[in-house]
Image (tube, rainbow, N blue to C red; front, side, top):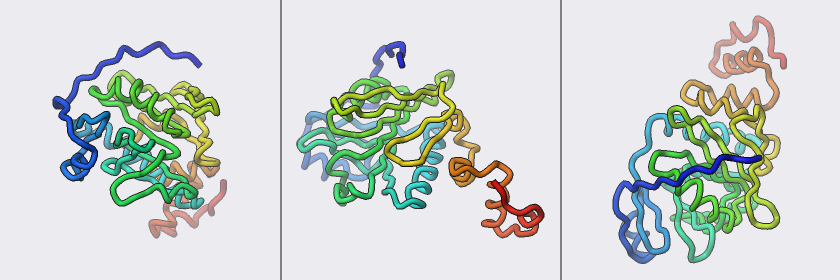
Length: 237
């Protein structure tokens, strides 16, 4: 699957400063910043579109992971150091599988997440599509999703790590069904990403599990206590 190369653009919110890793951990705790090769890079607050998409994916993947006891989801400001002595990154969203949960420490994830999602912002194009693309592959992150919901973009790249140690682009926004190898049985339609502000994660989860929209609405009504509406027809797939 081929893509037209993206011209790297990297305006920074502030000029990077240099310090040791230990000094960074003491100084920048609780702030949206990354430590890369001794440089500290702070970032601007996310847009409302960015936050809506992140909230949707967080709730959807977290619900699915809890339902099947697959692992846990972490959001920035929780960081990841994929390789010992390497950069400390703050992915928008990370999924850590149950078998790798011991990688979590109080301060950051000491080792690679199983899935990382980065949502592209105007100042992160080069960082997400180039720097982190190569860094995450070297670090052993099994799946890397790069989602660009900026106006007139609506692009999504789904990468899977190959045994050779580099990523394969296995799906894009043009696909109607993107299946994750990291989350068994989980799939999504990329079109949902552009509806994130209005889409209900619970109803979406039910759709993933094979319920029809009508049946999903009935289940939702039962959960909300609206038994009169739900009981009229019964729940069916």
